[in-house]
Image: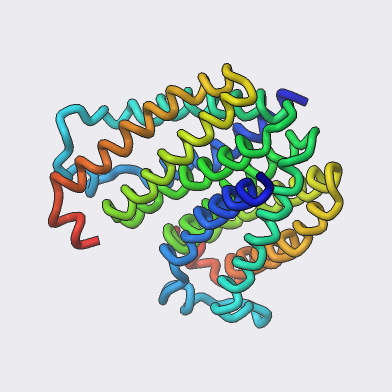
Length: 155
Length: 155
């Protein structure tokens, strides 16, 4: 049962993850001013695949335990906002709305981490790299807004 | 705790639901040939809001019970694919890929309904209108493909 549940949570991650292929960075993103610490494009899909495995493992560990309700709710919330960010930022090119979405994602990932940890500390620990990565993504989205004020206004 | 969990699941629904406002039907959808039984545009947001309440209630009822792991996993999977469909269909105008996404959504909603029902039949019953609606959406997506073969090929 554990691996079936893991597989379904991983499928949820892939549902969010395919947005990265469907709404790729492209010319618009390349011509934006970006901070010096921006990771190269290839880092993103590699990092996400590792994070998806960690996220699905964390979810499956807690899914088979009692008193997992709040953790499961925040896991659902974070995957919905995870799926939303790429179409908003790269699809619609909405830098400011992207920042709102990624900030909600960040808050839901933090709440999910804490709720997972209450049930199983290993599950909580598996969410730490994800929280760090979304923190970087939020900082990058904010920096892109600051460095491209005209572009942010037009969308 | 029930209502907090309900609120978080409802927030997940809204994360998927805002795609309807961000990627509206627009001129492209209006000029497509559609079957005679296509619901008018205003029906969609109204129906979705009712369904989101039912979906979050079903999730919260099962989240506070034991042995909910598979139901929670499928709930997460369906909300990720729910969030994905609108950007693919209305954003990218990809009719065929939209059909793939909505077919995966349909299967995950069916599996979620069955898994919810195992834990609490009322939660399963709350998913019946959702399954009916996604069945209609799948049929509509398929009919749009059939009626607009040239349009489906160009995207």
